[in-house]
Image (cartoon, rainbow, N blue to C red; front, side, top):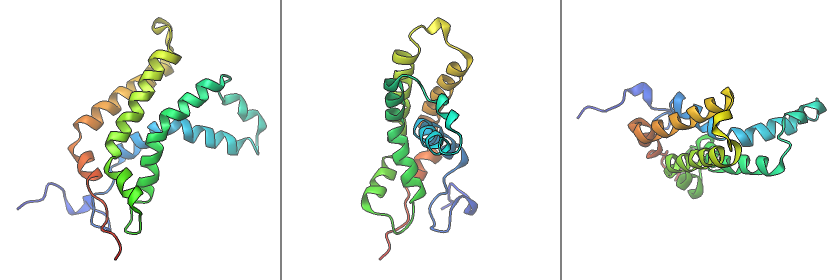
Length: 157
């Protein structure tokens, strides 16, 4: 029987490597949390960087909230080894669904909270919305992504 994937598609643990486009969407969907961490660390060296943060605390909390499912997937992706515990394995198995939850929250918040007046959306808001829609399309149509989430290195015995 012929394999769907080439030998180079597998890592040293003999599971499918995480493709670049999946890494892109994981990081993209976790961006709000990562942004807060980067700004918090940068404030130690450049205090004026705090001006990049939203002035509305609720906006910041909701943005970070939308990143939590993707952040869990990012943590699982970075710990995709034989030594990983059962909760990392469970998060990874649910990964594409968690990413869909993250993007759904992101789109919902964008349409309801941030873009109250859709006629006056700026280019950056439209770009993020386009990335969100492309993430949904990617997650729903990519067989390779689902196959990647179905594989995890065997537990260390």
